[in-house]
Length: 345
Image 1 (cartoon, rainbow, N blue to C red):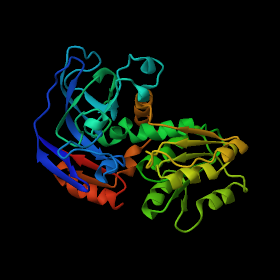
Image 2 (cartoon, rainbow, N blue to C red):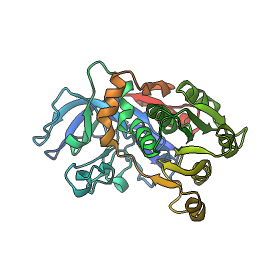
Image 3 (tube, rainbow, N blue to C red):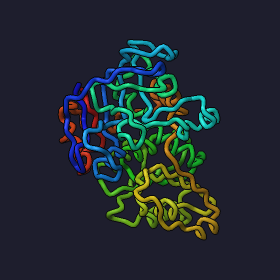
Image 4 (cartoon, rainbow, N blue to C red):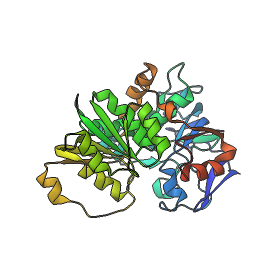
């Protein structure tokens, strides 16, 4: 089968690799019908996540089930499914508490042996372990493009918005208008804020944020903390959502909220450790939340919201390309020439 493979820093190649097959009773084999390139994939592309040449890429994908193991009860061949970017067992102590993102048996697609050794979704086929707790059925009539982001960035956007503790009439600041920030902008609207301020330096992203109901702030033209203060009578946003992962953007998310406000950080951190403003947090009575998205909690509700027309995640797709074009697609995405790229095998 064809698959996008990591060959070194800034080097992706589509190669013929062995087609996977199921080996455990809890696994499902999928024929991938649509994959996507995620901002997290760029961590591997830029060498921030160490990978071995030849490992398969991609963790956002949908597909049609070809075969299931005997222990898989929720799915059958022919079902169309969207897959979480990581697997969860559903029965460990933390899964039973509803924290699937902390599953003791977790493995992640598309990042090689370091993060679990699963295959990649930018391929023609992929095996999904722990299938009953790692996938959801796509409703009849819903397109692949509508469903694909439920397994990662749309769930992350909802996770970010929910943990930001948004109340009706609030002002919310979203720091970063990449794919996750745009999904957070969309999801924040479900909680009834008066205004969602969206900070970025890429004008094309800010234009999409505005289409999604956000108020754009171009950080290359104005200081974001000062601009947010200007929209809020000088006190700051009620809550902020950080969707980048850079130390500077986390600092902006902290500095732009009012006393008693909440900071929700979902950007993958670019550093393992950095200075933290403990006194500022204490003095302003701030709540700081962060973490990998708890995807399994949100997949079914988000699919229902999409089916009802309340969310339109496919709006952020800027480029539709073939899997054979993955090398060029990665270059474009890394250069910010595309907002979101989907790949058809």
